[in-house]
Amino acid sequence: MSNHNRPGVMFYFELRPCLKRLSLAEKGALFEAILDYGQDGVLPEFTGLLAVAWDFIQPRIDQDRQRYEQLCLQRRAAAMKRWDAHACK
Image (cartoon, rainbow, N blue to C red; front, top):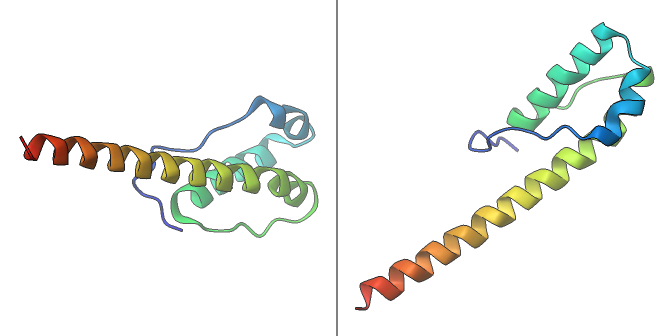
């Protein structure tokens, strides 16, 4: 699931209540895990509160990745269509 061409990951305000229950060290570990998973697909091995938080975060990262890939495909198809129309003239 390596996505080195993606610009990053989104953070959503809806996560704030979950994050408030974590210590700064746990938030840092979660942040690193989000970046590692978003960029390289590395799944963290969390337990406790971090595991619960991750269960909410991972599906959003996956949904955003799918949405981004779909958008790229649509834009690529539109560019090819323009290119083909231009080449036929």
